[in-house]
Amino acid sequence: MAANAAGPASRYDVTLDQSDAELVEEIAWKLATQATGRPDDAEWVEAARNAWHAWPATLRRDLAGFRRDSGPDGAIVLRGLPVDSMGLPPTPRVNGSVQREASLGAAVLLMTACGLGDPGAFLPEKNGALVQDVVPVPGMEEFQGNAGSTLLTFHNENAFHEHRPDFVMLLCLRADPTGRAGLRTACVRRVLPLLYDSTVDALWAPEFRTAPPPSFQLSGPEEAPAPVLLGDRSDPDLRVDLAATEPVTERAAEALRELQAHFDATAVTHRLLPGELAIVDNRVTVHGRTEFTPRYDGTDRWLQRTFVLTDLRRSRAMRPADGYVLGAAPQPA
Image 1 (spheres, rainbow, N blue to C red):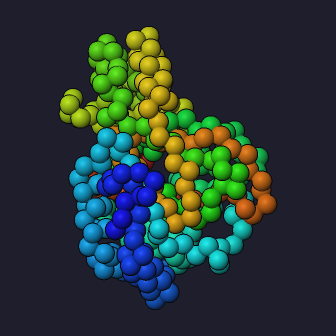
Image 2: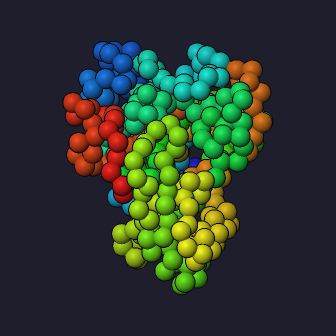
C-alpha cells in the first residue's frame, strides 16, 4: 500500500498500490456476484465479513489502527478502491434512494464495515437500508440533509440518538462534475486546544438539547439538556448538530458560536473522486458539505453511505431479531 502521492506518507490518507487494488477488486466482484440474497440480509453481511479477511494484510492492519486511534482529524480517505464506473447508471434523483441489490459499491462498503465493527442502519432513515445513496434531489436544495445541495452544517450523524454510529463511511461512485461539492470534516481534537477555558466548561455542562430529524417521528417529552462534550476530558467525544442542537443558557449559546467558528477554521474539505472512501470517526469528528449546484441530468455527484457500530450488542433491545437495523425509539442519550 502506498501513501497518497500528493503528500507525505500518512495512515490517514492512503492509496492502494496496484496489487492491493487488484486483489480487493477481485474479492469485491466475487462477493457481489456470488453471495446469495441482498446486501441487507444477514447472510450477505456474513459473506462480506468472511471476504474482509481476504483483504491485503496491510490494509486490514491500517483500518484496525484507525479504529483504535483515528488521529488528529478523526477521518481517513482510502483511494483506489473498485467501483463499477463503466456500468454505473444515471445518478438517482429521488428522495430515499438506496442500494438494495448486490453491487461492487455495496460489497466494498459492507466488507469495510465488517473490518471496523458491524454495519448498522435506522429504520426511519431510508427504511433501514444498510447501503444508502447520497444524491441531490430536485426540490430539496435547501434541505439540511443528504438530499440537499446548500451548505450542510457540521454535525455528528444522528447526534440525538443513544446509539449513533461510531463511523460514517462515504464511497464515491461519481464525482460532482462541477468540482464544487466537497465533504467537510472537523475534529474536536484540533478544536479543543483553541477554545477558551470558559467555552470548554460550558460545553461540558448539560445545557444543550439536540432534536431528532423529522424522519424519526419521535413523540414524548422533550429531551433533558445534555453536554456537547462527553467522556475523557483529555480526549473527549463530541455530540452536536449545529442545525439541531439548541442551547438552553446564554453561555451555552456563546460556546456553540465559538465552537462553530473553530470548526470552520480547522475544517478539511475532501472532494472525493470515484473509488475514494472517506471514513469519519463520528465520536470525535463532525462532518458537513460545501454548497454546490446540481444539474439533475444523471451526471451529479453520487456517494453511497454505510454506518458502522463498534459494539452492536449495546443496541440489542432496538434491533428486532438481532439484525442490523435499529427500529425501536431510542432512550435519551
